[in-house]
Amino acid sequence: MRRLLILHTNDLHSHFEMMPKISAYFNQARRDWPSDQVLTLDIGDHMDRMSPETEGTNAIANVEIMNATGYDAMVLGNNEGLTFTPDFLRNVFRENACFPVLGSNIYERATHLTPDWLLPSLTIEKSGLKIGIIGVTAAYPAYYELLGWDVTDPYEAVKTLTEQLRPHTDLIVVMSHLGLPMDRRLAEGIEGIDVILGGHTHHVLEEPLLISGTYLAAAGKFGQYAGHIELAYDPAQRRITQFQSRVVPMTTGCEDDSSVAALLDRFRIAGAAALDEEVAQLREPLRLDWYGESPLGNLLAAGIRRWTSADIGLVNSGQLLQGLKEGRLTRGRLLDICPGPINPCRMLLSGADLLQALEESLLPEFMEKPIRGLGFRGEVLGALSVDGLTVEWDSSRAPYERILAVRVGEELLDLGRDYVVGTIDMFTFGSGYLSLSRGKDVVYMLPEFIRDVLAREVTDREAITDSHKARFIDKMSSDARG
Image (cartoon, rainbow, N blue to C red; front, top):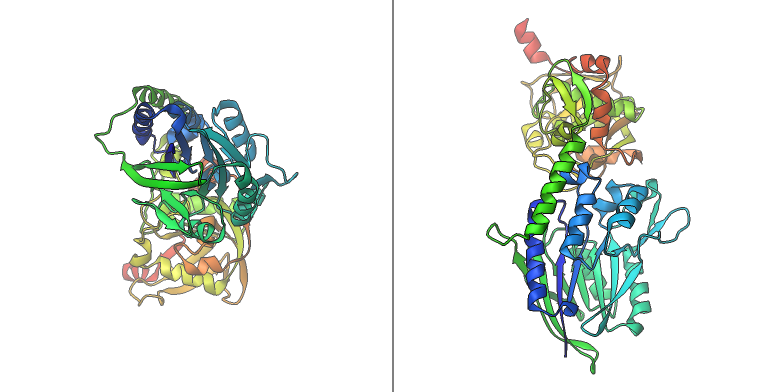
């Protein structure tokens, strides 16, 4: 029998506080097992640009800590592939990574070839076994194409590579940053896969799933767990005869790897220094309100409208976590208040769909709605911040009947007309306001995030002055004052 230990992580999302614990656990496993019987893999989304260490070091912190932890390979997740440009990824991995990076369904758009810093597949020898490794990531073609990538059907990529590798290997392991439903489909439909290590949907499999002869395992998110698989392989029968899989909590009491902790301290200092770069000097504070109109929300909406060359700007105030004080404003402070990897986009939206979203944005159940995934890094959806619009409404009226009039510039909103709207990519996926997902001719604008839009706006004195002008006018309050 040939015995193999597979240690795996996924969806760390730059939770650096967990990385010394993971490294210590991996090191202990290497002491308990012969080193040539241990395989360590990361299933993507290790990097997250909401982290000061990642943003401030251009993700070198992630790569160097993975080096120190001793990973044998990783697959690109969508968080790596969609929040960094191909040139950026090439530089950070080629110059710094001591492990191979897989992208079995990602190609350069110009050549339709795998770039020289990525591998379509990998064969590693451990415990006298030849292990074929495939790494696939979730396909978001509209985004990847804008960054210069072609991303192909991951199912077909896995099927093709499994057929190619199977005759020359003992085991096939798929690093799948696709999510559990797709992992099930791979197991059910493709013969010859031994193990699928999952990610993307942040699922935890405390015990393995066995589907059509393929074992599935996954370790959740944020480094809360490390995946631990022990298997025995019979070379005579050419099959796995024993398979045990579990997830190990990386709890507060777990030992830390002091060398990784020291490395992390160094990168925290370096990241903070880089993010201390001044963006602007604010002459006055910019207030934020999640549950109503505020200057900072208006400023971002206006910036998105200008960035996308649209008639109307829309963004939820929950994208911003705090207001800004007067005085020196740095890149780090903008990251603090706007950490999400959210991109601006432009679309055509009907007046009727716009009106529905505006009505919903006045309701507490929408403002207080928690959002999960899709790049959102806030607490609640918040109200809609707008630019290019004036909304007259009456807070005393029934829900969905509160808006009295909407003007686009000087003209009344035409429910049957399509308007050019600048907004955020999150809305196009149906998150927050369903009506905003009905936009047509959507154009995503990558690689800049909405915090890059805000960085431009805070240097524009006229834009800041304009942000204090009301877009929402409550006629009940106005009438009561009169």
